[in-house]
Image (cartoon, rainbow, N blue to C red; front, side, top):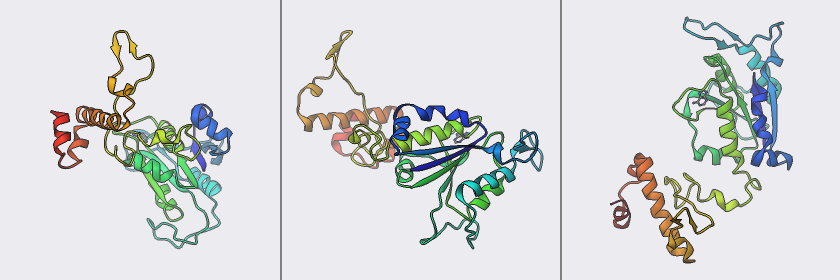
Amino acid sequence: MRIDIVSIFPEYFSPLDVSLIGKARARGILDIRLHQLRDWTHDVHRTVDDTPYGGGPGMVMKPEPWGEALDAIAGDVRRLDAEPGEVPGPGAETVPTLIVPTPSGRPFTQADAVRLAREPWLVFACGRYEGIDGRVVEHARTRMPVEELSIGDYVLAGGEAAVLVMIEAIGRLLPGVLGNAVSAVDDSFAPGAMESLLEGPVYTKPPEWRGLRVPDVLLSGNHGVIARWRRDQALRRTAANRPELVAGMGALDERDRRVLD
Ligand code: ADE
């Protein structure tokens, strides 16, 4: 997968050199390219922001550097006869999906991570200040699919930290990135039997530590009983920490109701 990141703080992304994502890059599974937005400015101050039309606090990112950056990265050879909002159809040459992190976006979920992990090419546009001039996304939508995504209901100082979060969530799902591919199967929010359940507690050796024993069932070797116990734990934890997820599961069967009593 190729990932381009445009930011006024490319150095923010040094964590992408380490751990799982760093190894995936070293092994050629991930091709991550960092770009300094200011490289597409033309004034001595390398200005990327200006005051907002209509008044209000803060500054807005100017459209021109963003337009040039996206032209240079995604290629501006193909001008779609697209209406704003229309995405390229089959037969179009390869275009990336543009992801714009913003607290005003749709919530980024595990399902988005799974879907985006199947894309060959993602471009992340990191806004700062009060955001990017609205015409940038409007124009980009005529050329490529664009997703405005939020990582949570809080406001960060810029999109950079959100991009790190999304790349880690997406990157660990790429084939060959996780040491043990099955470990993504039981993730909280992973599609399957544990869908919409939070993962329960996990244990390793020693069997007793500071007077606390690992639950006997996990030492039993009975995989059917262990799987059921884990699901019960997941259900209890979800009811405690995210009751709205349990409410969204619909009517619980008799067994699940007893687990939560
Ligand atoms: N930029 C600022 N806050 C953000 C958020 N919560 N999610 C994504 N991008 C952001």
